[in-house]
Structure formats: C-alpha cells, structure tokens
Length: 136
Image (cartoon, rainbow, N blue to C red; front, side):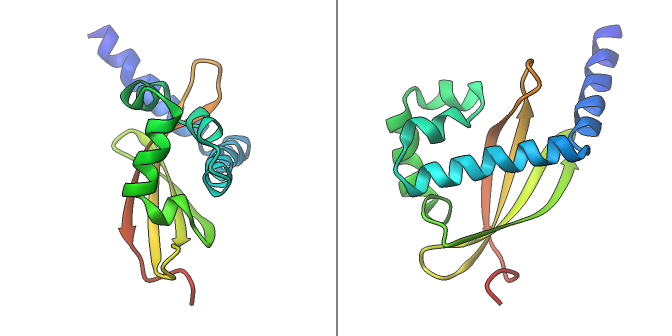
C-alpha cells in the first residue's frame, strides 16, 4: 500500500513540477530540438530527445527516423509549430503542439513527456490528429 501511495505522490509531484516555467521551457526545448533534428535528417539528434522506452523500442536512430518519416510526416517536416497547452492527462504530462504539415494541413501533436531521474525531460510518445486551429 505504501508503494502505491508513493507512486501516486510521485506522479502528482511530477505533474506539479511540469507546471513550473522552467519545466515548461525545458519541455518545449526538447520538442523543438527534436523537430529541428527532423528538419535536418539528424537521426541521432532526434533519437536523443526520446525517452529510454522509445529508444529501446526502436533500437537505433535510423529505425526511429524511418518510423517518423513514414508514420508522422507532419512532425517530420512541419512547416510551422506553435506550442499550445501543457496538460496533465491520466497522471502524464502532455504538451500540445499545433503543426502545419508539409501538405499545408493543420495537425495537433500531443507529446507525452517523461521526466528523467536527473530532472531532464524526454519525449515518451506522440499522438497526431487533424486540427482546425493552425494556419488561419
């Protein structure tokens, strides 16, 4: 019971920490760094912004870049990105990013963020959906 309570407190503390201006800036910097790396086909740079779980899942920077190229073209070659809200969803920190894809269409990327033991932030997933807010 104490372990579960400690985990819940840890999740709440992590979420509260992400609400500080410093953490918001760090989270946005990680996402911006990855988007910039994609623009330059810098597989290693993009992969470095991913959480250990994502890195383990894809194994190599090349595998990761190939997946993003084929499955996430609006993330891979966004024409514009605008940071929207930073939310807590089911105990996770989610940064909303409005994108304009290479096709000129509007998308919403929901980046799930994970704080590392050293206090840094990494991307632990990205969900992409169509949006009507960007590019107006």
